[in-house]
Structure formats: C-alpha cells, structure tokens
Image 1 (cartoon, protein in one colour):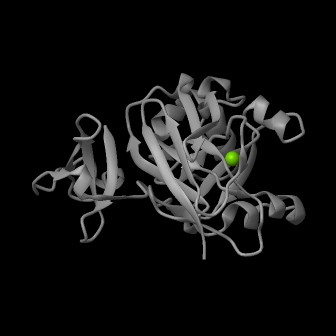
Image 2 (tube, protein in one colour):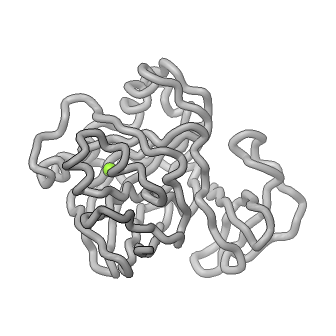
Amino acid sequence: MRIARYTTGEDPAYGIVQGDPGSEVITPLAGDPLYIGFKPSGDGPVMLEDARLLAPVIPRSKVVAIGKNYADHAKEMGGEAPKEPMMFFKPNTSVVGPFDPVVLPPGSDEISYEGELAVVIKTITKGVKAENAAECIYGYTIANDVTARDWQRSDGQWARAKGFDTSCPLGPWVETELEPSDLSIRTTLDGEVKQNGTTADMIHGIAKIIEYASAAFTLLPGDVILTGTPAGVGLVEAGQQVTVEIEGIGALTNTFVRR
Ligand code: MG
C-alpha cells in the first residue's frame, strides 16, 4: 500500500493512494496508521491532484543516514567504502515534503543532491538481529540527502552540512509492500539524468544496517534510515529542480531556492 500524508487546506491527514498515474485517488484514514493501523476515516475519497502531499512521515526522533554505502560513490568522493556502516544523523527539523522548496543555506556555495532509498521504522527497535529486521520496517520512501559539501569538508562533523533546514526531502508516500533488494534509483537535475544506480549495489544491506544501528541506539516508530547514494552526485543551484525516482515507489521532486 502507498500511504501518503496530505492536506487539502485543512489539518494534515493520512490516506491510502490507489490508481494509475495521473488518476490516483486517496482514501482518507482515521489517524496516523503507524500508530493506530489502517482505519478508514469514513470521509469520501480525495483526488490526488486536489491534495498537496506532505512529508509522508515526520521522524519521531531522528533520521539515521549511511555514508558511502555504494562503492562507486565512495570512489567518486575520493576514498574507499568504510568496512562497517558509517552513520550520521539528520535532525527531524530537516525534513520537508514533495515539491517543498529546498532552501540553500546562507554561507554555503556547494550544495549537492544525493538520491537515496529511505526505510521507515515501525516498532521500537533495539538490539535487533539482521534476520529479524524486516519485522521492524513499516515501509519505504524516497529521500534526497541534501549536503553542503563545503561545510562537510570544513566542519569535521557533518551536523551543519547535512542537518540544515530543508536538507531532507522525503516522499511522495510510504510504500508498505516492497522488496527493496534490487530497485533502480535515478536522480535527474532539471531533467538530465545524473545518478542511475540500483539498490542491489548497496554495500551494507538494510537488515545489517538495522542490526548495526539498533545495537548502538533505539530506533523509534517513524524514525527513518537513509541507505546511501549511488555515484553521480553533483552540485545544484538556486532555481534548479531535482527528482529522485525509485522503482516501485515513485518520484520525489523538489526545487532549490535561495532566500
Ligand atoms: Mg547520503
């Protein structure tokens, strides 16, 4: 199922998205299905085109992200891939939704897109072994791990470079039924293909990442894991549009602006 968070001008709501591209319909749900299950609200269906999609999940405590999880991307960044998953956090205040503007932060001149598969956590997850990791997953969405490369180089820590407001677009919805091991992942900049990979090339798979992360800290329902980006990262300027497409989920588009 595709679970969207959306608004038609009223308070945000959740709904199930069904139908063919261009004529999708949202069936409204009674509340957040992550916490209360899939209960229809009883309200009538909403045409997707009449709704504004919001970030499909607001991470309850954190976005966990994996650096250099594709060998060809590690290479383009000038190094080897780390032996164990290399982790950092993005704050939940960095999350925005489909078509929301990504605001280039004042003081940085090198902003890069990174298209990534995102995992949404379903349960309180601590000390979970890889073989049980699937039980902790609510679904999958698309992320853009927007990064200020100049701050990444200058700061040592990546909190500012990868944590500034609007640096974590998520969407367009959460797909709850997906086999994520071999999905094409493609990023375009103003329509030009820049990244064209497959999740099959991840070095550390999702189950291992959940084991590794949850050995160190508790993952909460609604927390999100970004699984790394394939090769082809590059800079984006104000006025440009980035779309990340993942097979079986859809497409996430954001325009970059300077204010
Ligand atoms: Mg990344």
